[in-house]
View 1 (cartoon, rainbow, N blue to C red):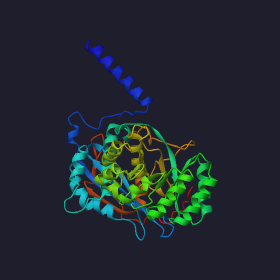
View 2 (tube, helix red, strand yellow):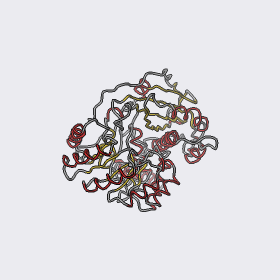
View 3 (cartoon, one colour):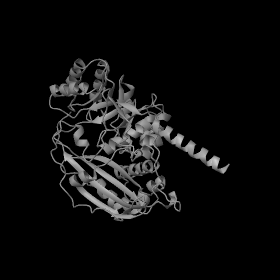
View 4 (cartoon, one colour):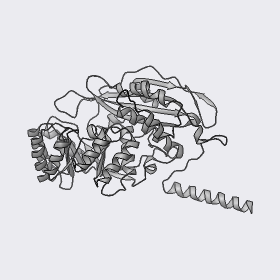
Length: 454
């Protein structure tokens, strides 16, 4: 009887494992824990922080200096060979951003080392300080890394850990700011040729110029293409109101960031008086303050909610923001512009939450020029010929977590900030220690990368 029971158990186990793999739910091939250890024995042994970036020859604001974009990576390593990665995107003008990296090293690393990485809520609550304001970007880098670690340990993609509402989304291309209308039209045509049917324009940030731009774009684009305008909080209230009426007449899908995100009073007034959907920018103000966000939803400040997973402090907080918006019956358009690690975290939230219905995000926003935002990655997010982006899944051997792999040699080569806190020695699954390669000195960032819109 015992032999028969064991045979039946093994047969059932193999059948279930085969079924799960065929349906796309990967199963870990081996346990990270030995018979004498448990999940409670896992400890965070080291934290590595990298910052790398590039100088753009364009920006979102036609009247300002070229932007410097940077990616700050938090790599958390633990006992038993587990690790997780989180990345956040920053923008600056005169020099590359160091604030997130130094905050992670100086303030967060000492509190995280030695903790159990699966006690995520305990760790994140311990990062809140009563002395200095808690910055959302370093919080997000840690939180996303802990979620990625959990996914890697279980072999389950993050979107499934979050609920798994769907596996793909239409993409939306968002333009940089150009100098002429003809450049916008050329960019639009290139997007259509690549299969994208949703376009968002970062305009001239000038009402009179933008009025001519949106008219030209509507005349140039097929009627079935979704169009949106983003003016990065640059309009007065009267300009925003006039533009909202014009965009409605031109059958645009939405009007984004006409006013500063903290200006709830005027947003509520604008939304009440507009026929087009009004959205906030989603990366400052209410998106960084859950109570302000809830107040904005309650007062009807926006037609749809908008936030970025990194701007609101991580995936754990993003779930709360999503829940607040749903409680007011408001659709959430998650922002996903940024480097691949940032975009992947936002994509998993969009694919995991919202049930895939009318309250879910309608699309995935693609950062262009794409090459700049793929720096330091082995796996990147690309859409198919139908304009759909799918679940990140780099390989069968790496099915869980964010599903995108980092090219660490390229990261170290281009990093302008590198710091490791904690143990230098790491353990593989076989239990034998291996010396980690020494981290090289600071290198010059990638400058003046030649990358066009497509």
